Image (tube, rainbow, N blue to C red; front, side, top):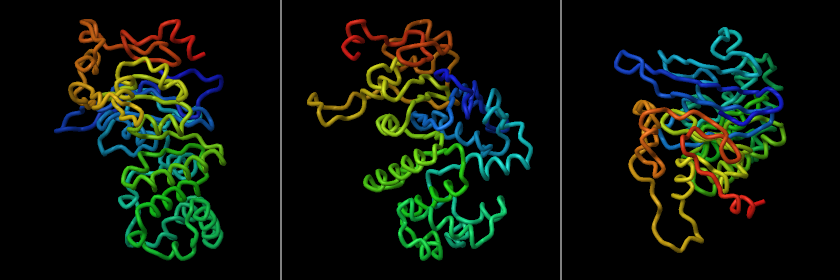
Length: 335
């Protein structure tokens, strides 16, 4: 579904389906995720809660719940992630891909020092000497805005604020020198000012190192500000993929356009919010036709009966039977 690249993508998620065990039987949580990320490119995966974006990101590192099954293509630099051996998977997690999780407190052992957490991957998985590892992570801590690095490394996670702890998580990810960074809503639990600081740190570090990034978020504006492309998920499927710069003018899928219209704007004097009718569906609830049909003003009988396939639309591609298209005079006004 994603835009074509002139070179093979670093990460290629192609028609990925994820089944989870529910009540002793498999149920589909992600029906079709399509995301392609080139070397050094940042792509945002956007959608409401339950759309399957975090499951898609976790599938890249094979961190899905026990009993989960994946189908379709999931390749990193041409190598199948599901087919990796245990030894290769350890190497993959230790050096090729790193993840910044939504809640750092849930992923750092509170009984161990921050320094131990930061150097563990370098010393155990990559054989770096302890002294060298401590010097390296101290430098990265300073890079991500933690000035008194040596003192912070002696502290326990519970002694740090949420913002500082998320910086520690970013430092741990950067220490692995990955080619791809997965950022799963890394600012959700932070105040607005700290959110801006953390996103600036991630963006600057990514650009300085030439990292590719998959950024999981529910915020379209933030996605467009920090990424090159935006992929939108709804009810377990990728429904649109387009350049971030074209998001406001060329979004073709009714769901993407409804999300953009529902955001409050300081300059909008009409009053009230333009809410999307109905309620969002999870992947478990997706019908056989278009999952967005019940909430879509453009829906017709075909939408209830036949699942839409991705096709070129606007500046990107959209899985919609009746995508929005700009009139020629409208397109010309943005040239």
